[in-house]
Length: 84
Length: 167
Image: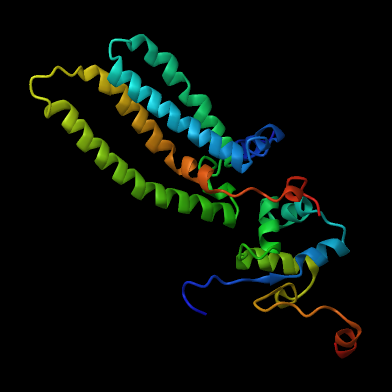
């Protein structure tokens, strides 16, 4: 990746929030950030710090790489679930 | 009663629903333009009507509501202590101060040159020294608030659904 190219981080936060019926504001309070920051992270416009990523991982009980990725996430389907 | 820090109070003030009204790009930019007009007004008054010194006070008072509204329009990012901002807002603040520093130095240099020309390069012409005092005060205030002004001009509109904080 060139110097001028901005890193983009893909996230499953919208899906995880939807599963738990969490609003951006509620998640923002849990992660101690401004609620708009959640929106920026979800749209890939802001790369979250390690602290935010670890807090999110802890809250959702998932590894960080299951929530954030440098590559787009594959859509969930029966095959991916069966494969583990 | 729990003692609240200055940062806690400022954070709360800048999150109030009243403040959110100022946070659209159109309103932010309108405020910056108003600030520019205010500066032009002060400069014109001081240079064209230096004897109307009684007008300076009321005109100067306009600075405070304008500066406050600009601060509200950027959620007080340049006013709230950095320890009370999250990573993204802290980055915004750092960039605003960084850019304002360079622009401020250039503006101060230009201001110095203009002042020198105004005061000393007009041989035989009487220039009331007092009339440049308000211009200096205005430029000082503007430079002090420049990070917030630059941020107000640059910040994009937030997507509508985010204002409701749901979705």
